[in-house]
Length: 94
Image 1 (cartoon, rainbow, N blue to C red):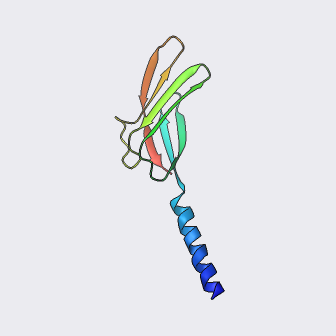
Image 2: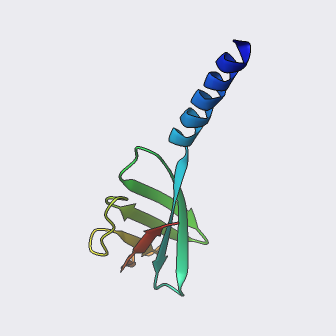
Image 3: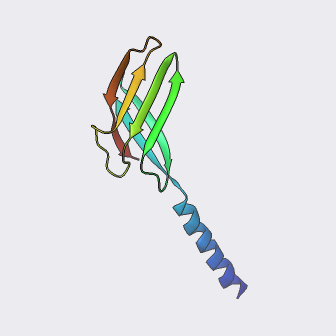
């Protein structure tokens, strides 16, 4: 009886762990052929991030991870003078 009980608990834990996993999304854009890799928790549909790196301000949005769209998915890069350029993202799930 203990074996069966332990087996059921193990199966439930495996099922719960698979449901809590993350989806890896890879997006390419044409700023020196750069790539964004994002681990998105299951249940998330939109990704929106802002960060600063090497004196540039980055902001990107993936509107719907279940239906990628190069019009709605973009990255915007600005310098300290406020000059901004926006690139479309070509995304896919790994």
